[in-house]
Image: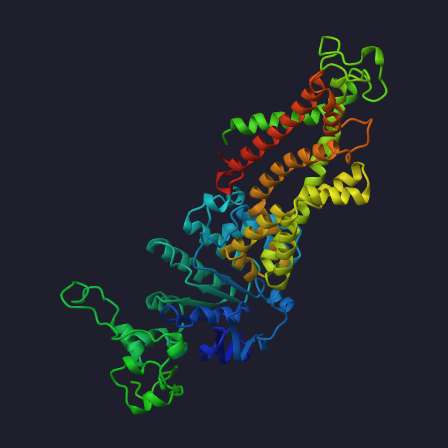
Length: 326
Length: 273
């Protein structure tokens, strides 16, 4: 492995321009993903995890824009890349799969053609070769009878099958990075497990790094080696995925872990209430001063309400953004 | 896929009109222009003269057959021009948005504000009568509905997951427009196009009726109606048969358009069923 990480994000800020003023929808975002590594980004809806992924792939559209910071892919800065340069990366070196397999496939085109198009577009193959490769791709995502399935239209496939096709399309050109934005939210739990397993195995085989975005802490910890927790536009804690359950450091993460129901616990049996984090997420236009978690934090002191904490390196590995971390 | 009555009837009528136009030299009894014979002037329909004859003794049956050529050529070609212009402008406007969208919108509103037949009349007046002028005049004046439709479809399709997915997968703008947007809006475009052909046939008839279409003596349905106007009480068959031809062709095209709308829903497409 070379010293250069595959993805390096430094102090990224994403601005939301609501016409009269600019507010930072996400700021101070820094993380790195090594080649073949699995990295998770968790947080609740609206915390900025999806727009971080969109910024990475150059798809922020007004009113959102990159307000500052650096994104490096394979050592090269990509945040100001031309449209042609971005197309070169997209699909070829960075691929993405979406939450909704129902809508992410073109309904009037057979799935085989949609896979084959990737080979034609990025690898300059002829349609004949590409169609052959499409059958192999379908077989690799374990779609039964791939040579017949290539002629199917998306509406003829089940949700799980469609997500397999999406994975086949995303991995067709052997990208270095796969961004998976809530890849299994629309699927039921058993199919979810199969798809996650498939994705993880295929990426491990090919050395593809995964950036997984989810609100499901358990799922992310299961797939990823390292996890970053986002809250209100900032990464509050970044840890190895085992550590985050065993010894969460940031009060927000502690709250999240404490609120998970455990099989056999009194709460899961309905004898006591599940723990919850008091209060609500602040609106994007009204983030509190200092640490953004302070209004909901039991340990908050004066400094938390005035000055935003910097990241502290933890002895056990990882970072946390809190004055009073465990 | 169930064959629907409107599709079958409409398709048959349209196909009949095309076949008649193509095979006119073999089906016609006489030459539509040269075989004038005042001895046979204004014969009513009979076994010899199926549709009767006109004031110069020309066979109406033969003239209606040849007239199909003009009407259908104008209908199909001018609507194709309209569709290409409308889709190109509307699709790009809806996809790119911004200033280009404003320009196309202004242009569309301009076209919608001026009655297309009046606009076509003005173009004909500049270019002079004739088949080519007809094609140009009708081809440039009826794209606004197609454009509106293509723009509206592009606007809604642009936000579909698969269009965003295509962007993420590195498709260029042109490729997205052609492979993702166009096939998904083709159904309604084809339907509008078929209906537009019907109205182009009517417009041709109207312009020829006004003497701005194909030059006499070569027959077109509109000019035949125009010539027959004075004799409508004494020789009604002169206007009946060309009128019937227009009516059946336009009816056929409208039924065909309706039928196509029913089957061009992507969810009813399937290879196995």
